[in-house]
Picture: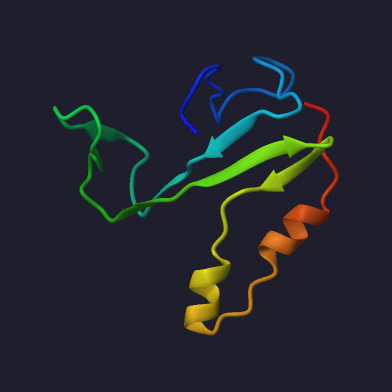
Amino acid sequence: MHEDPEMPNYGKRGRGKKFVEGMVVAIEPMINMGTKNINQLSDGWTILTKDGKPSAHFEHNVALVNGKPELLSTFAYIDAALGVVNTVEEEFRKKPVLDL
């Protein structure tokens, strides 16, 4: 999912590159219990919060297919293993595409 053209998952509506048919974007939030400030280790990959509090990172991959967002990644397998009922992904699929 990390290929050109780079599509940052931040910015302001109406600015930046246009998300067009067939493109895929990786939405990669970092959820921190403390500060948003981070340190990147010398390996160029590892990120830690500056305050050392717990943090989590996950990724969803979304493609624009036939004018609608298609969720390529899923937590359904994890939910099923845990016996959790989760309708978030289904609700996402029903939402209209935003005019970005």
